[in-house]
Each structure stands twice: as structure tokens, then as C-alpha cells.
Image (cartoon, rainbow, N blue to C red; front, side, top):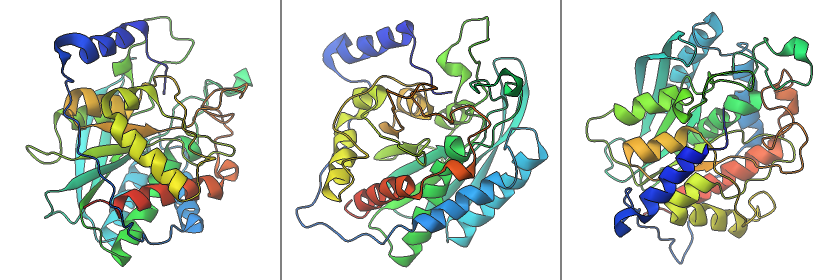
Length: 332
């Protein structure tokens, strides 16, 4: 998952940004009030407990018992926070021909509001630890504590806080399935962006409500790693630069500049790409970039058997969660 985009896709981005002189995705109106609203506190311990609850099911690989049980838990958890829930039962075919029976899980908060924001993450975990330093682990499934569970956990804690103090807007919490069943480095065919993010591709073509629109979407991916830094990702800048600026400025305003440097990083194939290019909703990706990490720029546990709850940092969860809450409560 999370591949740097191919030259062909980069060329497509250039064409869409230059051809005709107009962007293909309408930009959202971005404004931050002069007087800032006070958001509820983000509880990092609570968020960590949601990471642990997911990993306790075991690897959430599609078509497994652990996957099914976790889907049921996520739906019930959103309901317990007062969200109106919708589960999309999806069937998608992977790059290697596997038919996945999956679930996109949606929790609607303040569903009557026409002013909506999407908070999203993928909840499945990778079938193979193909980036593990030990080749003997390459066919083992991944717990996905950071790569999957951390983004879901932050959104669940935000949903819990939204009960305490209702925001002025509607929030749709969306947990995408089948994101991480894409080809690894051993794949001999041509790796394409559409090999990834199967659940978000499905939702982008068939949203949970006919004619669905939102101001923007925020994707949280691998937001609990130790030492994580979140740079301004390339596709996010291309489609929704004002929204990127909004969130990175917000992080600085509340003391999290160390986690959100005002610097650009590369282009990453992730669920937000399909939300932008198919659903035409401006979407950004909060995803780590660790240039000096030997194992992966996504961090040392990416696609390894070490992506476990023990390697989650509550401080990272808190920095991301507080930033997102701050923005939500300053939307009008």
C-alpha cells in the first residue's frame, strides 16, 4: 500500500492541473474564524484502547473471521457514540484475482446538516508482512496497529468527543475496507494505483447517499507511529492545497508544529486519491514521511510483523487527534 505514484499518474496530475486552465475538482471555501472555538480534549489513552481492541481480533485480513468480527465491533462502536450507521457490503476483486467480501462502515454524526466533512481511514490489515527484514515473515499477516488501526482509533475517539459537545457541522466517519491487498515488490506484473484502495474506490463510485457531497475529506493513515512526522503530501497539495494549509496551520496554532512540518513530501497512492479523482471531493492525507528511516519512509514497522500495539505512540495519536478536533470545531 501507499506507493509513490508512477510516472503515468504523475503525468495525469500535471495534465489535470494544466489542461483548460481549470481544476477538475472544485475547491472548498476555506476560512478560519478570527475567534477560535474551544474543542473538547482528545484522550490519547482512549484512542490507544481502540487500537488495542482492533488488534486483539488479530489481523483484519478480508475474508477471515477476525475481519468479520472487527467489522461488527466497529459498527456497534459508532452506534454507541450516537452515529447513524450504514454498512456497505461490497464485493471487489484484488490484483491477484481474489474475490473479497468486504464492508465499508459509515457513521453519520448530525446527519441532518448539509455542511459535511468526511473523516476516513482504512480498517483492514495487510495479508503479508512483505517488507519485514526477515524473509521468513513475508507470508505472515500483519496486525496493522499503525497501518490501519491507528487512523480508525483517532476517528473513534473524535466521534466519542462529538457527543460531549456537538459541532456546527455534520461529520461522516468512514472506515474503508480492502485498502491494503495490493502487490508488493515481488509482484512481476505492472503495479497500478487501482490495485490499492478497493473499498474507497467502491465508495467513491457509490457513496452511501445518492448525490452525496462534502466540503472535504481527511484521510488518517498510520497516525500512531513513534517518531512520525506528517509532511504535506503531494496529491493532497494538488487537489486540496488550501485544506492542507488549514490543517497544518491548525497544528502549529496548538503546539504541534514538530509533528506537522510546513514542508512538502512526495505523491502517495492512498484512499484520498480515489476520493479526489472519482468522487470529486477535495481530500487530504495525513500520513507520515520519515526520510531517514532505513526500512521505509512510512516508518520501521510498515508491512512487518512488528506493526503491533506495543509500537504505537500515544503522543502521536494525540497530536493528530487534537489537530483534527481543532479544525472541526472552528468550521461554520
